[in-house]
Image (cartoon, rainbow, N blue to C red; front, side):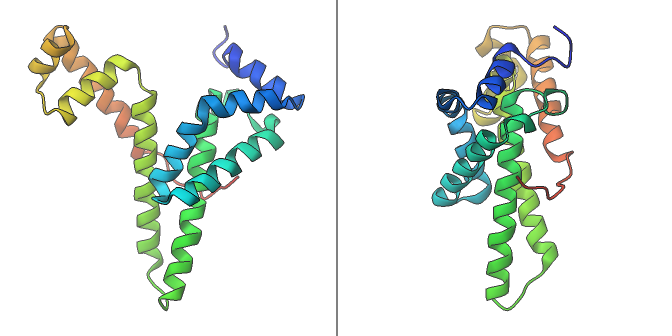
Length: 187
């Protein structure tokens, strides 16, 4: 398969959505609804707003299946996560701007910092959930259970060098969470 050819499931799903198959939207929703909702909730910290973003994202995908360009977006999962982050950040900006205005104004820089932190946090969550299971397991042992690389290696049944490699690669992937600038685009 060529590098810029999307996985077969992604191509077929896009074709089905373009034909207007309601069952395709249901399948897509079943597969990605928790990703969308959890990402939106992480950014917005509001269940109702996360529900609304979830509806908006799937509505957008349903109405614009041709907006998915696998050469630019990668997998459909990545595209949907990106749409979710953009929409959730847009809603956060709106909500925070309204709150600042109601309090008689505020610092735009403070608002942007809050939005940036929320977006980076959501991206980091997505990266961790998307990384291969061996890397994720190593990071979870090291950081959530406070294991050093030797204990991580023993728990995973791998060599110490392999544990260090997994931790290093996992951390390198996580470091990219802060490297993408916010461009302010919405759906």
